[in-house]
Image (cartoon, rainbow, N blue to C red; front, side, top):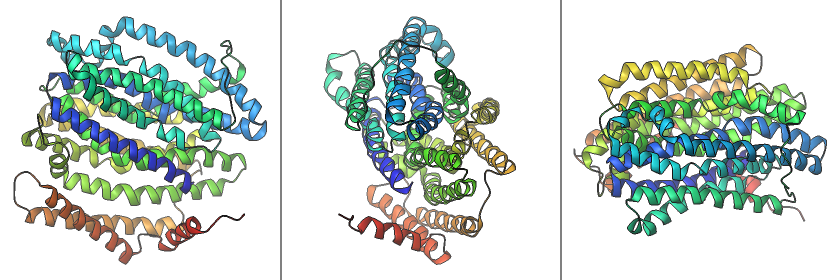
Length: 513
């Protein structure tokens, strides 16, 4: 699992770094102006589908199903199941795409109600969303092919494909902007073309892995019906975080101009550690837990979840503390240039701090839900997810006026905490999860180490001069926090150094033959 998670995490990191390059360009060119607000709202709809299918409900239902077929019936039967699924997906994704193009203005009245008072901004958002909406067709099919590759323990191409999203966005923004009404149009075309490129890459990787998918006539076979029964509730259960962020965008359009952009930039920074750590762990964890459950290895599945819990907290707690305590310096260094001002960085930093406090629980949701999905249970996460969405909406309405753009971010974090706590309680009650002895010993030490890091960061930041944080000052902050966390972790025994040495030794050991 660690090797697979490392592969996924490495490619996800590359995608996130390129994503930051793209966002830095957008911030410098558009800032938090009306074109930026319109583009980010337009991006939300296809991006919601990408997150739900690429990282959520579809994989949760499809990967265990095709893994079981692959290991019990062989490659040919698995290819047949993949072909049946592809045919049905092509049919209904095509229908959704056509309907979305036709009814897009009405969709945006729901997604961006605050834009309706500004006809020009609303019209631009409709135009950009229509350009980008076909992306969901290609990226959802790409998610299907990724699921097949993951079931075959081929993680590299599926993790690498999102890199193309950022590459095409950057290239199109730089090259096409002079020929289009504004940079938003160039970015929108880059998004759609990247979907085609991602699907092509994954189909090529699947053929190299020895499997070809031929598109048959769509039929609702018993296996497809079972797949969609599992997938339908998971569309909400696995995508609670994304639904919560979508609620944040809806509320953001009702707040002062620029709030949508502030929330976007803050969320993008917060998504870096979440995507690299949480998504990577969840992607690698699902097939492993599914195999252990299929072999009736309940204790093994519980131990796997414990080790994943430790690993995720070791990595997300320092990220959460760093982004919370040093939120404004982070925004200073990343975005303050061009149209993105120091004042904008302060506002975006406050939203980032609110998002960041929920980072560990965002990641925990991603590693807890496989405990349900691997057992074919997508209904329980759905019920808990719906409750979390309703809680998020209620808190948004309470926070939106007194806290402005900070309110949606804080509501999302608190709703995610609720989601993680209830998922843990249900798994524990069913006997599917409990903290084992190593976890009980290590988790308090990880928390103590994190608090030590917070103190080091706060003290260092207090000594720095006021105003915009320079790159040397930011590096000093990073060094102080890193030394406190790593040094404190070693002294307190928060890290399993023997396990780390064993992993490194295995990687250095030459393969036989």
